[in-house]
Image 1 (cartoon, one colour):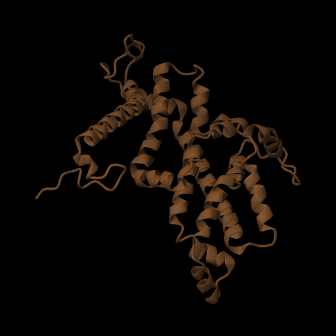
Image 2 (spheres, helix red, strand yellow):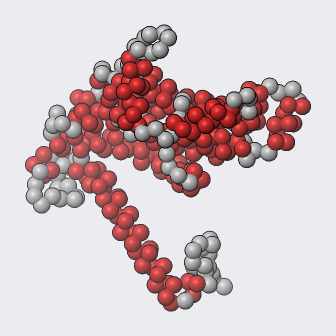
Image 3 (cartoon, one colour):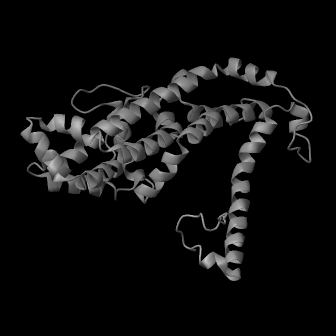
Length: 298
């Protein structure tokens, strides 16, 4: 006997028994319709950007606007790509993403491991201080941070116009340290004790035992890091003065002041959207699962 689609659903707020009742079926389809409308509202701007990127300027500025282009000019895409040398901005964003990701996982992960498993003297005070930094408004630490980057304490060098300030901030993220610490707290002590009996050092335990069984939290932190790095604007704009070193997010702001015609600026927006769509299409399962696991978005 062929099963109903309702019976094949995983347990949710409305069970398969509830859905056999007419009123609950109506609630289900109303909610489904609302979600479809919300999805269309979210998808429409992206669809409009992709459709409008190939219009000529006259059609782009026409009133009322056209969704499906009457004119098609794919050569504009290559022209804008070459005129802006857009590949180097992709490269800059890639360097920023990779550097932030490595620093984030290594430094925050090691610190979370130390306060969770090693617990040296003063670890409670250290964790409390890190936790308190989450209560400080960002507007209060912007000036001290920038001054520290302009003249690094003790060594007195200027690290602006590089990605080092972003790497440092990614490696000192209190929220992600808290995520690591909470996850490591749930790892059974038997794993650590067995590794110590085999003669493994604390650092060896971290890389050989903790990291391999921490794929869920690594995926969550990686998602947050990559998402934040791709959309990072304020600190790259503040610390990187040379335009050729700026990431895509800063370029979008720079070009948004009327440097390019509007139809060409929409093509730049399309360039910025494509990597996000590719990453989401490949890792959508992990992105949605990671958001559910974390509970709160940082």
